Amino acid sequence: MGFGVAPREITQGNVQRIMYLHVPTAWVAYLAFGTVFVASVAYLWTRSAAADRLAQASAEAGVIFTGVTIAAGSIWGKPTWGTWWTWDARLTSVALLFVMYLGYLLLRGMIEERERAARYSAVLGIVAALDIPLVHFSVYWWRTLHQPPSLMKPGPATMPPVIVAALLVNVVAFTLLYAYFVAKRLRSLRLEEEALA
Image (cartoon, rainbow, N blue to C red; front, side):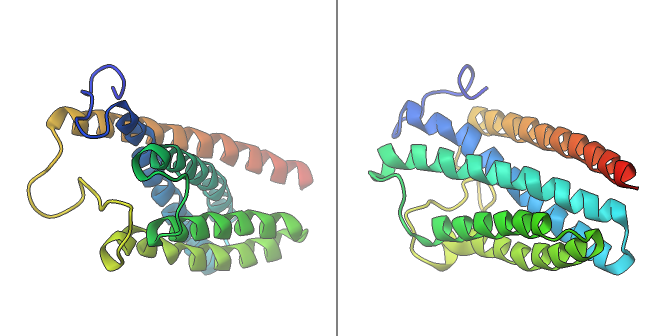
């Protein structure tokens, strides 16, 4: 859809097509880390091993999607802003989110006792999720190079329907890819626990 159906953007040209990767991976990263938040709260409330596995699997997928978001944004940033990276509010808060969830995975891997690793990771997963609103609203709260959302804002849509359709197709595709990654990882985590038991 992004290459074959959506038209060439007037101002940025073909480099704007990176949006069809950058924006959906960012949305899916929000979904992944939101899932970590909910599963972590559920784990601390119920001590459910299934909730802990879901948090871990979703954090792993979220780190992948955030990494792709940062890489695609850098590639898009070079021709549009003239630099691969700038320490503006949106980019800095996303980098912080990425590092916190890398720390989540590192913490989980460093602690051998499963219950304690799950408990500590759940707390970090909840605290790290507090950065998501900061990432999302940073373009409204501070002056940044990063543009505000083009779709999720009040008022009439500013993007042509064909571009919106192509973007939404990619959001659905990346969401399904996320669900696939999480389902496969949940299965492998369950098998690991059964093997250890």
